[in-house]
Amino acid sequence: MPRTRRRRDARNAVALLIEDHRRLQKLFKDFDRLDRADEEARIEIVETACAELKLHTILEEEIFYPAVRSKAAPEDADSLAEAAIEHEVAEMLIDRLGETEPGDPDYAALFKVLSGYVRQHIKEEERTLFPRARKMNGLDLEELCMAMLARRDQLLAAAESANEALEGELTEADPANAPKENAGVHRARSVR
Ligand SMILES: [Fe+2]
Ligand SMILES: [Fe+2]
Image (cartoon, rainbow, N blue to C red; front, side):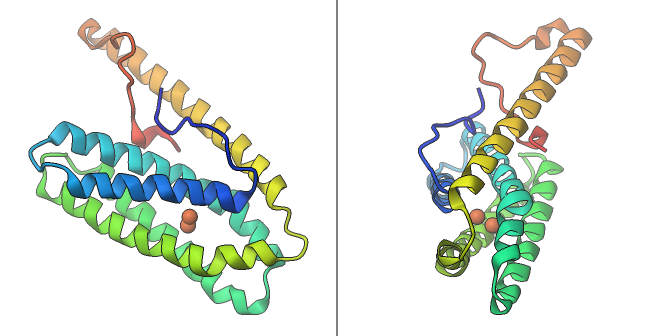
């Protein structure tokens, strides 16, 4: 089961996004502390963080940001535009990571750049945008939370069936590739 499946504690959209931020920050810290030689652990963290980040960005871009934009004051326009561009840059780095072999020296470098960038983006969201969203008239954060949880479930279910289909194809091509029970297969790149 992907580690992106989780408890549903948050009842409002901002709290839900902050929960995501904390998990991402923990993954970045875990990566910083890893022994460079432990390639398997590095891959696990990179794939989990990229999957988490993709899901988080989709929820923000499809649901949270459009709702905030619709209620925002004109002076919020710049920070909303900056955040959207930052999401694009993060996605670009995730795509490059997806094309880079874990043995390539750029693999760790790309992840370090991505994590530094996202750490800064998280700070800006939590300092500026989230406090404003909490005060916006007519922005129903509980309703937005429900919509984001429903979309997250949909994306996770789609990722799981894509993984199952891929496992089926691999097994057909070579039965030695059959997944072992409870193998906990996790593929970051199939979330979208
Ligand atoms: Fe964001
Ligand atoms: Fe965020």
